[in-house]
Length: 167
Length: 291
Image (tube, rainbow over all chains, first blue to last red; front, side, top):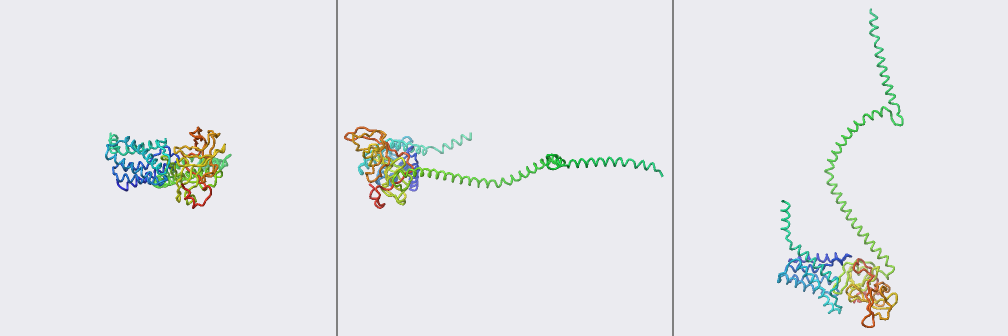
């Protein structure tokens, strides 16, 4: 994937974070857009770019919301690598599989950040909250929908539709 | 000379002339009488008759004339109507846009007014700020608020809404600041049970609730009691509502386990009031106060 496209994806994810984050209904469908952006880049299979994109997305998240820079960068870089690995080495496809993997990645992101915060800031480890589960579901479902839309044969569908009209 | 024949020729003329005269006179009389003013009408009867008789024809002609002129003018307008239509559409779009903006502004003003209405009941309010982003991850509860050092806000400034305390600013940029919410697993505030006056410490549990610690088992606290800030921690001013006691249970040692339901609507924060740091200090000291 080209760098310009990666930058565009990151910018879009950040914009979506702010768009939903400033809404009073932010808790209704709390998607981790930066994780979705990392997954989109990792889908192309480039390890280096996936890791760097994850790190950049995490760093952005840390700069905005975290007390330490690098917590989410660490987690998302690792997740980017894992996702790229799975997309290259393992037979991995289908909207449901992708959605499930991203949901797990969302929970893994929480776990890594919680452990790091506990180690570095002596904070209590808080995992498996209803909100975290809901965010994992929302992020996974959104990623599954994007994967389904991405892999859908739009051209053939359009062609079939055109032929049906002609008949 | 044959006079009788002449007489015989002349005799019928006065008859014909009389008839003519009579008919003329009758016509005149009729004309005069017709021109006499009509009762309860302006103008004469004759004119009224003329108008009555002529009106269908005049109307028909006028109708045709109007139809023709209307058709010609509509044909002419058809060409200009496209431009006018496009102009009107652009104007309508502009008006819609302005209406949308004005509605948003009115709503914002209404929200700000309701926030400001609560200001007299809170300690020194520096200003209000929109909440731009709220992050909840692994026990962390933080928010990004749209106010910073340009508005005189520094680290340590408490945040509140009319319903109660929200948190405090920990890092401030020029126009944006990061705040730690009370629900954060590492947040704490000196608290007081309003009914009994007992002091304790409220901590966030990182899961969206608050815990009131250090209340002895001998306390008379009960569910529903209001918990407010005590002003003993050097960060938050006193007497700002924090929450209400949700449940009380005996703890493992000498203290009660008290869960507190926050009064501030953390799930739907849109704007917050920024309070002056407590106790009052120089803005330059603000950065060192952040933990």
